[in-house]
Image 1 (cartoon, rainbow, N blue to C red):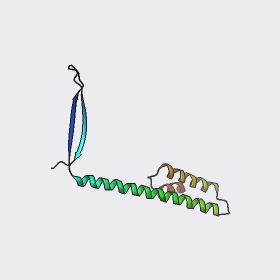
Image 2: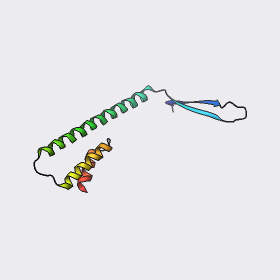
Image 3: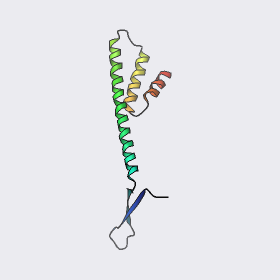
Length: 108
């Protein structure tokens, strides 16, 4: 079994003869560049997904706001509360699944 990493430990004496204190620093050296490249790509893709979801949330918020402003009839208070709760949860939990939040609020 080949190791894809190597741990390097640096031991330092604290400086006095009678002390048995050592500081240990660990560094992970990755020998397989494919792992690093794969993880880098995964992080970049995740960041793109988060950015796209944030943009979608903003767009949906804007559309909802415009739709409600355009409608002349009053929206029922419970529906208004549900919408405000959904918007607040989406703002506070950027990485959560939007459809689940909406379904949970509508079922309550």
